[in-house]
Image 1 (spheres, one colour):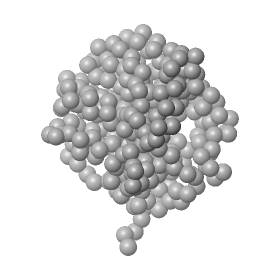
Image 2 (tube, helix red, strand yellow; image 1 turned 90 degrees about the vertical axis):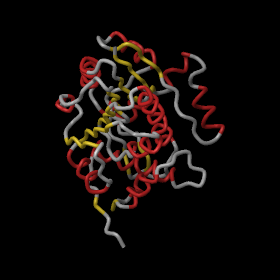
Image 3 (cartoon, helix red, strand yellow; image 1 turned 120 degrees about the horizontal axis):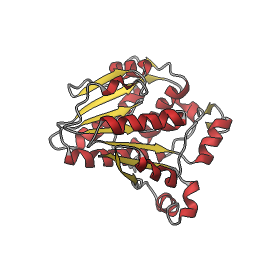
Image 4 (cartoon, helix red, strand yellow; image 1 turned 120 degrees about the vertical axis):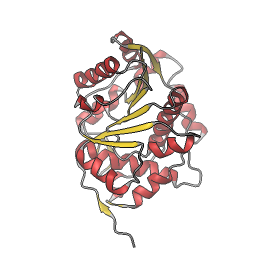
Length: 273
């Protein structure tokens, strides 16, 4: 029996285990909406009591598919681009995207804190197109070696809600300034959701409380990001479809009227000029 690796993660970093668990369990279903064998393999290699997160849902798989779709769209136009995955956690996006590209030439930069990067080094296969950078996304040195010429696609999947508003907006401004022709994609929950997280009432089970979330944006607030120098367009991205007519109907219903905007989060794609 292969010895498992202990994952000693706390705080926001521990959410990497939450999202991995949800995505891998979804991928293991007979009616799975996502193909993610690397996530299944990674989950099985970690010694952790995943039951403390409670029941899994398909929302994290839907989010992953949405980010994959936009990443692939950018790579279709910029095949030699670098994808920068900020606070990547234990995402396995690189392998899903690589499988979907006929002749993969893109490069991948993972930026996360040392405990996460060490787990990725130990448990995920190496690739000469993947670079691991052990530092905070707010330490802008990760930007220094990137050439914007071939293209840069920055993902902040499940990151910005855990940052203070000023820090999140400064990160967006810096990316827009440094990477003309690039793009940045991020997601944020609605304000009622982040308020629950800040109050300590947001739980996935009686054993796990979601960390505080200082930052959120409504669709109308996200639209104002076009005023940031270097931001050419702001797109409110629609989610990839999930499993079941009820799930998809609910996702669509929140877009029927601007009056419903406060109920939904945003997934935003910024294109830089």
